Length: 243
Image (cartoon, rainbow, N blue to C red; front, side, top):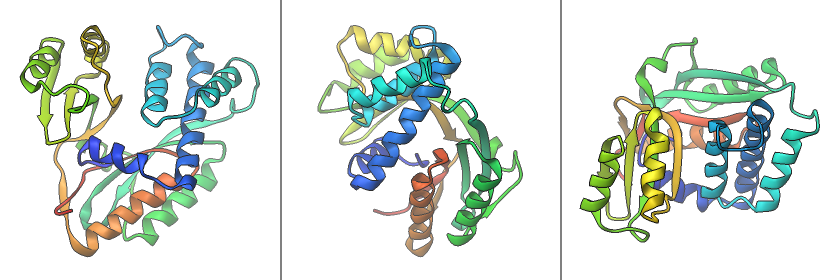
């Protein structure tokens, strides 16, 4: 998920080709398995599992895949040796990049990530080099096709604890501190408003607008990283200067 509109990212991922969608399914399934192993199979009281299931729903992951991932988390030992890491670096035009990693071989993954940065005009940095540019936030996206009363929605989520509300022609984006996630989810649910996505993610303090060749190189870097099996999530402050 890059720094620009979450709704734009959702649409892009839903339109991904079969190979990319297969990788998205695998990564979310792995996240569900790890979440279950760490906190149990009940999303009530297991925020990590709740978020993983929300991500699965937003990406239209088949129920059978979700069920198998949960069963794997409660039973088999496969996956218990996965290590969680964060890598950071810079993309084209000085953009900041943070990566959530889930790997069973940190040396292999570090080499692959370093290669991806280098190949696409960036460079891998030290831990902490760009983390200060991001804040952990709860982010909800509601499509206008689902609920189009902007004033009512804004009042509802602000009362529930949201600290930012953005609107465009297709969707509303709601941002809050992570602690407000449950209250906002509950407020939307009580009104029968289904979010296109809801997650706790890393949001950049400011975005870096790129155009032309730099924007194309940055998008290729993001795509390549999202295709890598060990990279669970990509966070950047990249914003396309034009469509």
